[in-house]
Image (cartoon, rainbow, N blue to C red):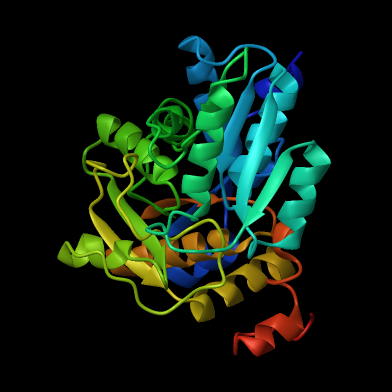
Length: 332
């Protein structure tokens, strides 16, 4: 019998899905790692589990203790559910601009959700800094330990992806892949998968996919952190080089606009039955761009991060899309 034991054992081992439309459009095999099929609904379940298991192993988090994190939503959901399964409380600090669906899900999970204004990282009121201060305060009084998950700079994040996501992709493709691309929030997924794939074959091309409003495309191309424009995508894009991203073996970067990514999302839903979020649209559009650069006959893998239902009030809201002068599908 093939039975998984509870929430924790259900994280990972997600399938690779051949994306028919993108594959046919490019003459390449475009494969999506179906991370939306993790039990918490996103790729962030992996980082959440890796961070918590590392803290438990180091003895800084014991049953009944508290996990604190600043997150755009999905990592918070993963941490709350991992915490529920392992007996921990969670305090989640999130920018108030994130989707209502993610806020609702965090409350449903039982997390102590604290919303703060969306301000740049350099501001002391940024959600990351607020979460760190809360964790430090709780650590002084919590008898079973309180940790700051620190997903952006905690290397347990990318190590979790190196030993699971990256190895799974290598095994699922039989080592027959030419490139991997995905966007960066913390850098854990891209860096961890890159390290794993390059261990097996240094010639696998690793490409950073960047939305508008993020500084990482310019960083990779010119060495300067410089952002242009904006994006409605949540949880990806970065204005600094996180510890998870430092020294990651990245070969190149592509920049994808919302105007390019949204039709990809809508086509995958309407024609292939895949209801995906904005970061998945950026990723698949980037995989298609990498495929065009490399030419027909190659295999490119990317990440399908989460369900589009977490962004229904934005991504699938005609009024919101028209307000932003973004494409609206005729069937919506």
